[in-house]
Image 1 (cartoon, rainbow, N blue to C red):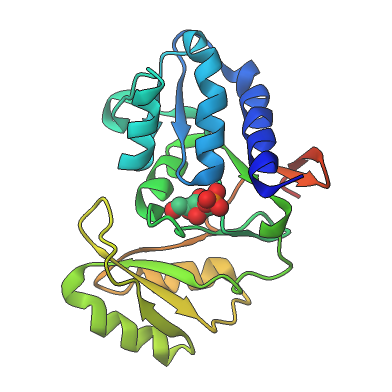
Image 2: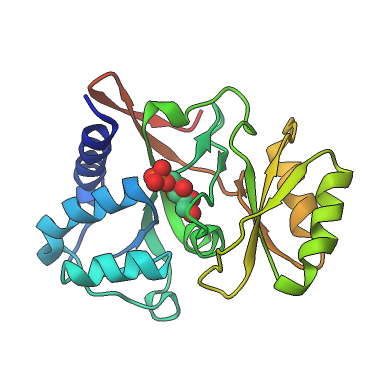
Length: 224
Ligand code: 5RP
């Protein structure tokens, strides 16, 4: 089965998985990326069963609206029962690297506002140890060189994602060559540097549930 078909199947599985969470008042958190897009397409079929969605990016907002799914501001939504989003890497403890689509900050905010984080990922995203995928870091533009030097000082090789401006008006540094032994500790450390908006480690708030393919089957895993 092609990766596209697998993502479609995972998107449908996620829509099925969250079905018991839905009431006519429900507002769902929706992530960003190609796998999240498949989820949105499946969600459209049950759009009459919930009130609306909080989008983690402008791109997701546009796709939700195209499917006539009402988009709600997080400020008006209150706490969300469930957030569904993809990942660039996920480890056995359900810590993740995210931000390949540059939406990491809003994704982290929506994840923090949600009771359950459902990660949807194809099998290529499961890793024993995070860090093969370069770690995205969202940075205030004037701090780009300062933060790049600090990332180099901890052993990383930061590369400016030139041409990319986030939905928040910031820039992205993709950090190669990091050895991530303790994702939570590294997330806290990088996030404290003045100029960093957030890094793409989702360890303090990792996933609760993982929907992932094994061959053509979709497995539902709970955080160990
Ligand atoms: C966007 C993200 C995405 O969840 C991540 O990049 C996975 O994307 P895809 O489903 O296209 O592989 O973090 O910022």
